[in-house]
Image 1: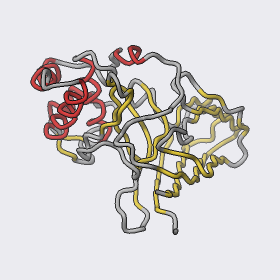
Image 2 (image 1 turned 90 degrees about the vertical axis):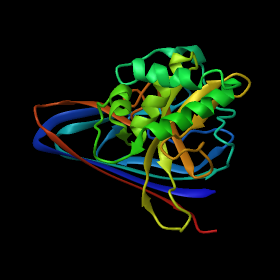
Image 3 (image 1 turned 90 degrees about the horizontal axis):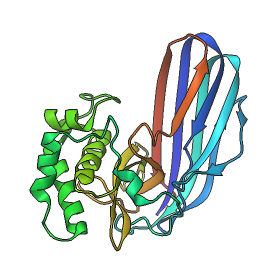
Image 4 (image 1 turned 45 degrees about the vertical axis):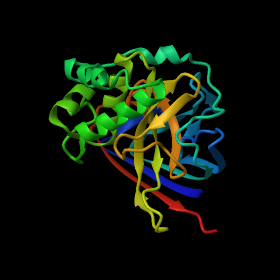
Length: 269
């Protein structure tokens, strides 16, 4: 599928700040199921560093903006060709060993409830069968409900209240998989939500689990499926903080308001 992405992030500061430095993981991945046709990240007045590819195979670029700054507008536009590989991340070059993704974080630490859920589906067959069973169990245990969780909500908290959004589904699935010694990680990206040709709010996240014989496979517990041609992969990390598309620091004491719009549309044939 030929998809077009428009992603706008605007930071507005109550008082001008002296400068800002950001690390952008805003560039679409290249692998067998996804090829980049065109991609651009722009910030008016900013100075960009050189691109580099980190050990996880994700493209990263730093951005510096000198002040006084009262607003930052980050514009991402791109086109990709996607293919349905049933979630398998094939021919994605990276150097981090899968076992590195067994390490828990504050957001993905498993409690007794998560461990019990994981044990309830363990022994269901192969690692692949177990991974699918885990994703199904998380999908059933957490109802997709916007507005009830926050960026700092942990996997355990989301499972306990039984509600959350894609970030919570991903964190809970990662935590459950790691309790069974299955390496798992958080993935940020975009989702083309429908096939009606219209644009939609479509920032998204899911999990990848490493399965012997297959490598990394994506599981979207929020939508009870594996990523297909409707998904655009950006980058990965141990959790949402590690995989955040935008991370940065500012110099100056000022509160910031963030407005984000993301739209994904199918290109005209």
